Image (cartoon, rainbow, N blue to C red; front, top):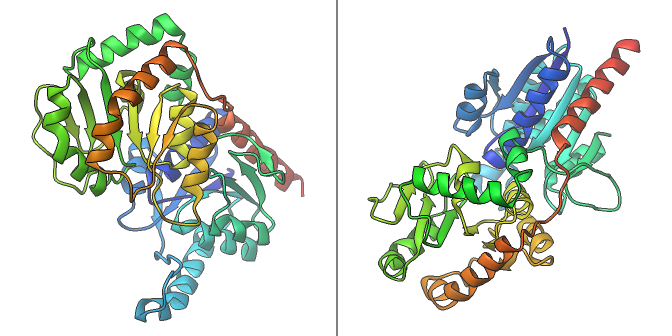
Length: 359
């Protein structure tokens, strides 16, 4: 039996693409044993388990970005996590990584164990884990062109791929159905606000301060606040949720999105033709700005710095933004991206396993 280890943890942006590939791999090679490496407290505990795959936890060893007492202990946690990963990788045929704290550990463990690595880079700028993957001689596959590696796009959920193939009349019908399921009015412009799988306190604060004005001006909102944040009271025209389980339905209902600029978010909103206000999170190496720019440069939305995003900014620009969003939607515009990334990566993993068997 072939054994594949998926390294993807922390947020849905890392986990959902990995699950898309895992599902394709199961169809391609039904007897494959699939295991995910995770950490305690990560979203993988919920998403991966719900998908029916086992998760084995290792010690979380996030690279320190400032010098303090915790940073001094990092090397011990990292070494411990590598040892734990080596045990999990025993008899593995390939490791496939999609980001999160577990990837750097998993890549190094794979290199030490002689296990082939496939690393997917979702962002427009390579992160620290995938720079380590290059050192570990991984096969690097990317979502955005970088002039160095093979571009495959982002592995998307099948429901997103199906939505992307819908035509104008089908989209309109789907929009009405989705809005009615949210108990919203199909005749009113709808804003979808979400801050990623963990939510955004900044977004939540801005919405709370201007909600009454937005509703009074004829807008309606679907607002994902994050599982760890307090859920506001719903109102006519306002649907707050902790987490959006059915993202295609939320996308179908949206005329305008206000969101962060994670790789999956920018690809999905761009591909589905949802005009968006991207508010890049100021973390990492600036990759969210580059992700958003890839869509904004083609007319699919606007970008605003987190420091500039405020209730005043929204109120002063919303009429203009909604006008642009409706025109973008009515023109059936979209930002093209490959739809077959999940099957391409699954096939690449299968090729690696066959090659390993021959050796």
